[in-house]
Image (cartoon, rainbow, N blue to C red; front, side, top):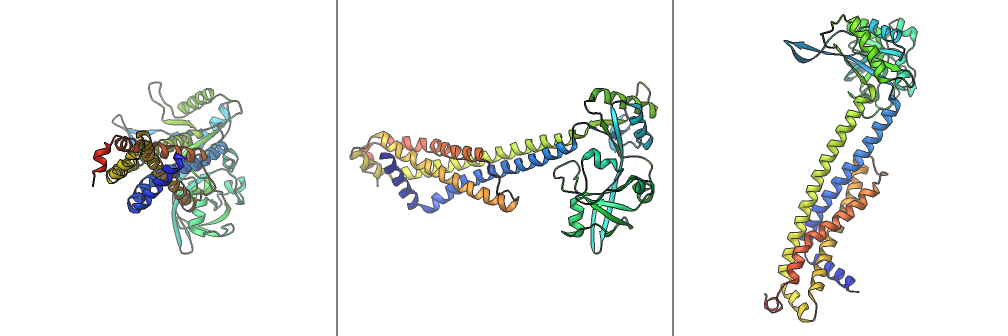
Length: 399
């Protein structure tokens, strides 16, 4: 029964100072809401990256040009050295490589009626859709005939589709890319997190991109799909041998190309997102610590204001442990209600801001309650001990 009496006394005390109590609750709530927002956002990002990683598979290597050097120092520019012949030689010269896909990417301005959007244009082959498991959700991918005929057809990524067409279907419509008319034959689905905004690009036959749009004969990258069960080391050795021979590199020269697993890029993003999320969680915990300091301050003021009340209770037979329990319960209630307010506010914010209303991280909700209760008890411990140690005679004479 004593605990219920303490709870009733705690609520009465908090109601008697609503502004002070409200500000303290807000401090705790902001910290908890921030923690839940970061956790939910991290879960959503993790799910998207995992889906993307599964669709990419782990048997695709990405070959990119190396960096140029000036007076022995590496610059940010890439060497122009990958060709269609490199792509063909890799697939014919290595038993580890099942197929290769040449890619050329450049910047382009997409126009549809009165809408304009700057995006990335990616020229590739029909095999790209197979290797990346990236088939259109509306329309179709371009064919080998359209590749050979340098046809002016294209597929839109989700971002380009939204910017130019809104929610309407783009298939069958014509757009302008760098002032040249292209027929939209397909729409790709949302890929989410990825390297270089995968949804913000337009796909077309690489022959069209190279000859009709940019006037180049080199490649931006080559995708090399390994055989199932193939060894990364053997595939890398074959690619290195073939490209060094094609590029006529001496033994004392470094590679002028880079080879990475395709899922390496998304894994890097995954690690970076985790580091950022951990940093934000740390900031949120700092906010919780500040909220705890607020609780301690409120409890110290409360002890000072209620010194006479403490003296009366002691004179009527209350022991020090009763006074200690009373103020600890009050501090814990502040922490718990601040946590509850933060959880409700955080989930509401998630629902309207990132559409995550159905994602409830129950483990973190439980952690939040435990953290808030712990902060409340720790923050109220010193004020409660101070209250319990008040001298009865001095407390009764306190004005």
